[in-house]
Image 1 (tube, rainbow, N blue to C red):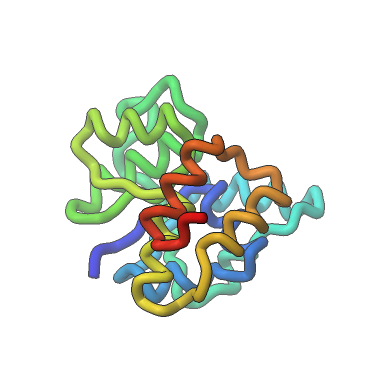
Image 2 (cartoon, rainbow, N blue to C red):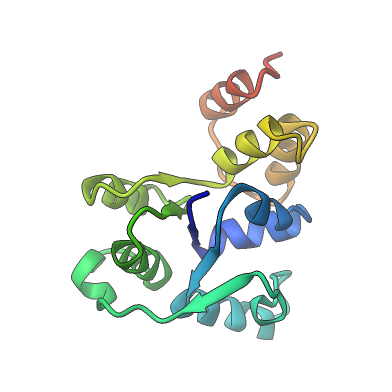
Length: 161
């Protein structure tokens, strides 16, 4: 199994869906750059419903050796750190939802997925019963998703209307 390197939004949404555990089922190690952990700590101090990563034994918080600005200066701190760490951890999968960060991952030749891809994969292995139910919950959490993408994701999951 390949290591998963996760950004803040993915961790937030999976935590709020109470599905953070699927990361462990879908990947080898679950790696989080320290910059992402810093973002989560700020959110926790502001009482946002986020996971306390330090309390999760199977999540590894890592400092990046390659400076994030060398990889993706135009991205947010967390996204840039995810791409930097992925550049160091060959064979890993970048897990992020931000479109510009995904374009940068593709330009760097880094395999990537996002929250929706993880949900599809989780259904394939029987870790969740319904992608549609999760997508509906994500909508309630203000996850941005076009109708076209929603339809496409549900078709892939075998749950088209």
